[in-house]
Amino acid sequence: MSLLTIFSAPKPFSDPHINIIQRNAIQSWLGLSPQVEVLLIGEETGLEQVAAEYGATLIKDVRRNEAGTPLISSIFDLARQASKSSYLAFVNGDILLTDDILTATRQVAEQMPERRFLLLGQRWNLDVTSLMDFSAGWQERLRAETQRRGQQHFPAGSDYFIFPRQAFTDPAGNCTIPDLA
Image (cartoon, rainbow, N blue to C red):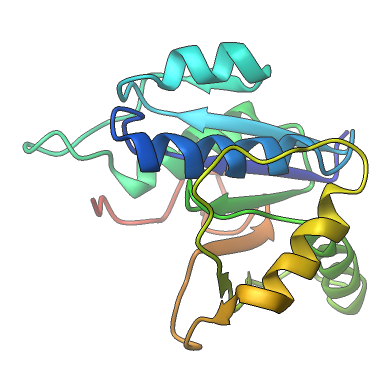
């Protein structure tokens, strides 16, 4: 069983900037550890091609509201069903992650014997305008670049949520998140 499943419902890859930042984010997730699985959820333009190119698992059958916006409840439910991990992380499609996220997940889980927690973090903004080099040392290079040019986002930003797989479910295992878009 893997430690963490990272799941996301990326935007369409049709805008050149969105394409670059989402590709960088997905590659950062896939480069974390063999203990991490990555699920991409939705049918947005370019998503199937990116999932195939990087070897991420694609899940297409997300429920949507009348306007065609994916429902959060469906995204979380699909991820839980497909996951083999003890912990899940819903991450916005443009968020780069380093292995610090795995350390934090382990530390919080060890402190919570009942496995009831929700881990959030404050992000750093860094303008990345090209595809990154994910060869050996990429995390150290990213940290150094973030220290040079990055700006810490205000504390209210919520771009990732890490939680035990049984969170947001009733005793029967059904998703308890409302059908929000």
